[in-house]
Length: 112
Ligand code: AMP
Image (cartoon, rainbow, N blue to C red; front, side):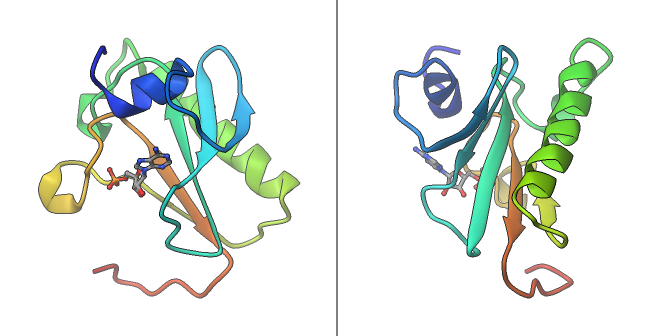
């Protein structure tokens, strides 16, 4: 999408601190980290949120979770949290599906 921040990052129009990139997925460090390790995994295609996952786009979501398993393993993260905020009330500020991966500190439950 033309005006979407994460579509712009996926297209390389806005720089990001990348961990991984392929044709379908991008992983990059969050600009405002909430834990010692905090990166985001996004599909390059525009999907607004978890609420818009369907049979036509779910394959890339499965690949995103495979990538999370690979990146956390490669980075020696045995304990981590994966979060996707869906909708403003849940804290979603960028309306492009993304999975936060947080690690490196104790993470409380329930979340705020
Ligand atoms: P959410 O609030 O769940 O939609 O998550 C959006 C995340 O994107 C926040 O954690 C922001 O800190 C992060 N963010 C916003 N702009 C950038 C950027 N240019 N590069 C990296 N992370 C960003």
